[in-house]
Image (cartoon, rainbow over all chains, first blue to last red):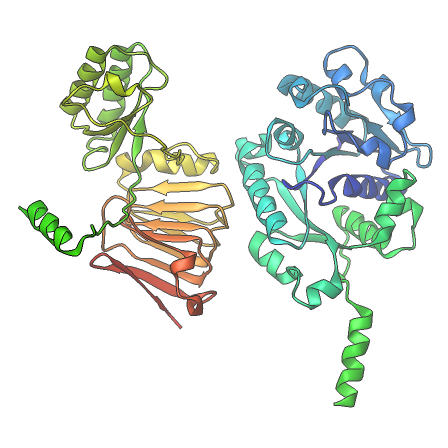
Length: 271
Length: 241
């Protein structure tokens, strides 16, 4: 039986889709079977980030409405054969997702693979609630700024109230992923630092992804960043996060501003 | 008597001193048929006797269409159950004749009974009148968007009250973490209630309806452990360290 993960945030543009693709690819590379589900009906992007946009025939809504079978809608990745995508519909809106339909599709996917990763839309409305509904664990993606952190806090509250697990009185596993972390700006106090964010949200930290051009380049060529620039800092941070999801204990590296550190060292020596 | 005095003072000063006061009002939303709704209210009232005594109650009639006579009758029925209606929402001004509560507009919903908070917390709330608990202990942080209402007594939070979250207590509020949202103590009319926390970064603190927003709180208290209490009708806040 697969573990169902939801990648969620409340706020838009924080890196949910990038994270879904990167973590999915990293988990699949280790040989586990992974299906990524795009819940952002009407504003789908995951197909682009995976470079699968020209191979979409049927989508999530078609499966829910019984127009297509799940096996027809799921697209296998060309680079990693254990990675697959269930795309969202771009022509419909989130009302086309039904409670029973989502429950059925997730239950079917659970039998097919090791990880089901649901890419949640932004917001706290129907689409986001349905994306988290059947999750066993959640990855809350947050950026080091107050609005993003507050929205993440709101989402954590909803995870504890609106998921099937929460309604059964069980606790949903929660992981914090800090994305777009700019070490130089954090050092200058222009962004919240890691300790502040952890103090406010008080959930365990899964990883810190530095702000980097690698993410932009990866989505432009339609490839998860963990594959396109496998030796880059972003890919390494996601790969570590994926290993932590698998239960490995890996030391957390807070991205630091190396230039800033050198300047500090020299500065100290001069003084 | 006192009204007369105030008026004369105001004439002498050419200005009228007004003070803001906020209360948490309960909005009753009757559903047709009214007779059944009243019966249900009676049923509920048996397990929570005296719940509405001394509490401001608003009658929200937006969901029903009632004649002028029916509105007057409903208000009478509620009065017979010791529920004094402070104001009416959701009707035309012409429908409220003399002797009826005034029309109110611009009310903000405040999720009193139903909230995002976990169902166990809800259960704790509804059981209050029966078990006569005098305090509520929350072992999890209160997250943004959650509203915890406990009018039966003190609330203790092991964790923080997030920005955009609120805790409303009948008694005092104790927070072993940071208040970043709103803490409203003494909400059942207890001026002796206090607010304590390990770290203060609140959006709003209130005791018995007297409130201060973060703008009106001395900046030197920011981030420190504090206690807040009422002296007359002035909220005092001091650091505990």
